[in-house]
Length: 380
Ligand SMILES: *Cc1c(COP(=O)(O)O)cnc(C)c1O
Picture 1 (tube, rainbow, N blue to C red):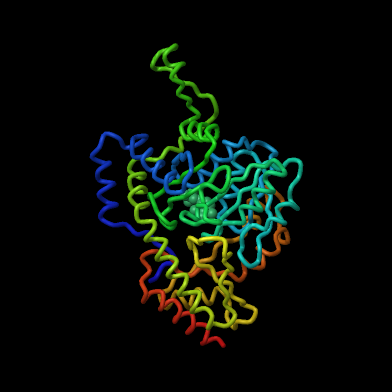
Picture 2 (cartoon, helix red, strand yellow; picture 1 turned 180 degrees about the vertical axis):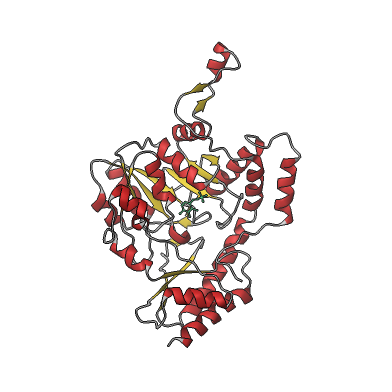
């Protein structure tokens, strides 16, 4: 069975983990800082805070910019639910702005139409690994005095106009779940260039504890202060050692993903009613996902049947994503409904993610395409 995504772990990764297990620090030790510095250095950001997963990183970002009850945060509907859930954790209201039908990235014009006096921030999502139009997003954020947060969980290693993701917004959020470019098992990170945001993220990860050395000197070495409400969102040294070891392989990982995407792009030209997403010439795409739009109205097969028949041939497909506003929780809690984001809703019926991961061999990607052709050919 060819899955749609899979991690790649080598002996060096395993050794890095074993080294930590033999060391004095399993958590809050030197491997955490080393991983933070490695990612900050890679993307070119001043600060990085590693946390237990990407969702915790999003939550920490919402806390850091002070999102609270009634505050509105604009998010795209075509993303993993965590992008919107993090707003709700803080008592805020996620407001869905529709996507562009060609790239499936949040549409700047749709954002402007959703801005109200209660809007505080925008969370952009670099869907599939393609950076959004950050010039447009930054200009909207500046003119309306909004914070710009980038959910770059799909886009480690991507670039917009030569600038790496992780530096294009006030804060950027990474995930190191096994399906992402590099993994730490579970793990997440926020990068920023703002020292005050860095301090808030740091405290939030550890119960809101501030370690003020001056206070400790005055009040005793046992003293610490809970200055905000925080959580235990710490990540272990074990995970960070794995993450840092993986990061060394990222250039190779990205190269392979691009190669696979190039092959799919070429192969899909011969298949009627299947179209890849548009890629802007201004970006370097990181290809977390390879998404194809299938015009099922003109194909003689349903998506469910396509999934089933591909599965029988040993090829795993997926769909990214069910529009977040259509989930029953959002319908109940925020009165969202079908019709709110017509582009995302229409495209949701068409999208299929093909297998895309570093370890996908040439013969596997050839098989994906030949199986697709066979299944679609059978249903002409
Ligand atoms: C993976 C992902 C997340 C959440 O990351 P976890 O590490 O699984 O919590 C958030 N947003 C997007 C777009 C993702 O793909």
